[in-house]
Length: 303
Length: 321
Image 1: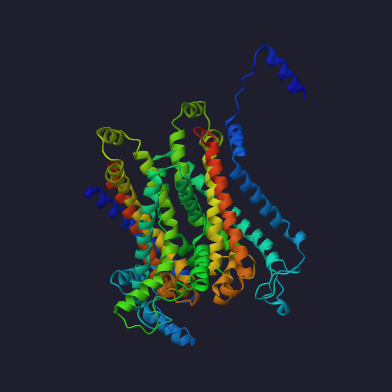
Image 2: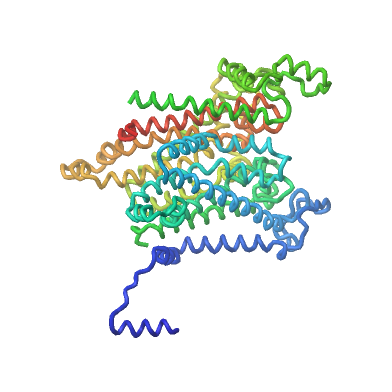
């Protein structure tokens, strides 16, 4: 309150012209973007409901109930039960936990790896750059799906299945981020403030972390959003094919897997339509958020 | 230009060798002796296995084994399928035409749809139809292909009954007749649409934006000032300039079709290489699995190479890099 009154006093003398920080401008623009805000609320809702799954439903997700196989939706089972008699609604909530967890963890690792390699490569240049970029090209030249499936087949059973999946997906998908971060760093390091920072004796780590990365953070955030959507597609797609999250763990992709049976696909819509819809809407909303962020961080956009 | 292309092709060779080393390492990490498929997996007599291992040279040093494998590979000797008991090249050769047909039709569908939608939206930007096409594209980019595939089977195969939901050809049709070809096209249509959906969206968006950008350039203004009819400006002047950059997408299409084929072929139980790949993982048919992994990696490399070279064709500045 004190500050507000002081501001008002100042306004009488000289109107204060403190411009907003780039992030504050971006936030303002983003909040005005209706589609992005609705998407953000939807994504938060899905996340919170998934996290609170054990408190929302009390049904057992693992127990196979022969007496209640493939029941249609009713007041007792909101979305019916699947072929093993498990409640679809409950599995949807628990599936969200796994799918979102895999998506977020993969995004985290991909961004960390990509930023690390991209910034080292861009900052040092020369031999380090060519070596790291050839390596990136090498990774990018692997057909992603093929190698994830093969690696999963080899590692399966040796380590906990979920983390094998997260590891293999992350290891094979950081290439694109590394390239983008590198090109951004290359452009940014030509600025004079970097020369100044180096001349007063900042170590390379400090220059990268304190001076370069904050200035390309907006790019990284937008890329992280897009990556998050891609990773959810990767997880659900692999699980749908039967090579992702282990079958006994419910995930959206695993639930959709039952649509491979013609009988389920044709007559038992309640088993596969809910996961299919929630995957699509989640991915759409993440994409809308990404577009909104891109717009918000773009100084040229008027919206 | 030739020099540039040559340089890119030479640069591909070390990549290919490195990839083959990775695949070989993966093969060695797999349980059992996976490279040749000569050892009968059901015969568990340790003496038999030891004898076969010695005969096939599995006790040699690893580099020697690698060179034997890779030289056999270059000569077209991929080993024997453990599941089908025939040469891997035969198993793959049987499925290859199906995948080629699928990939080819999906590219064709992509081109036709993207050309129609993109040139229309570019000509009349910010109208209702343009926004509609934009919205469709957005959904096309966001929906994962496996969900699109599942819904496509449900609506077009089961509910409407327009297209078959599995296989590549009707049973009992004589090979080579017109009926046989029509049946094949009938089977390939739905998977090809699903496979082409994703690329269609990016092609359309690219074409639209490029046409809009071109229509603001000086040469268009000159053409208008001379009194060239609007139709001719768009169909001849702008379209020619906007289509050229599109050809660079071809390389990425090859890459997208490989992973797309694995998913769509499985959903539509279409007997192609993608389905064979997943089956070989499931049945632990390692010789087939490894050959396909090498083949897919090779095609991905070729796809990226084509994209790079075509970039050089379209934008000569890149060649200097």
